[in-house]
Amino acid sequence: MEIIHTIGRRKTAIARVYMQPGTGNHTVNKKEYKQYFTTSILQSKINRPFQVLNILDTYDVTVIVEGGGVTGQAEAVRLAIARALVKSNPENKPALKAKGLMTRDPRMVERKKPGQKKARKRFQFSKR
Image (tube, rainbow, N blue to C red; front, top):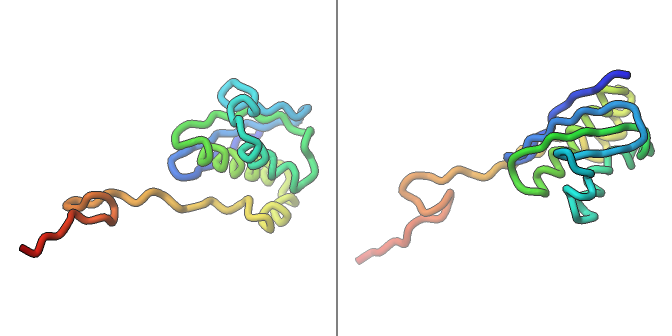
């Protein structure tokens, strides 16, 4: 029984997933995933890789996630789970890739520039 370790990232959230064959227990930061991600949308994001492959109750997943907000964390967990499923069986990759689950979302917050109020917003210009 081998434990598969993968990492997923989204914005500033980092999720480390430890997956092994089991009965379908998902824990996130030592809580059940339904307690940690309270909305059904976030819960479905986490289960999406399993739904695509029709293997909902075949793996136990332990997640350590930090940084970012709840949506970024959920999407980081989703990417890490998809990577772990590919690591366990490379034949899973085309199905997950077709649904867009293997792509790391590169969008990050743009940094604030000096001499400006925010990243793109300028201070008010006064001609006179």
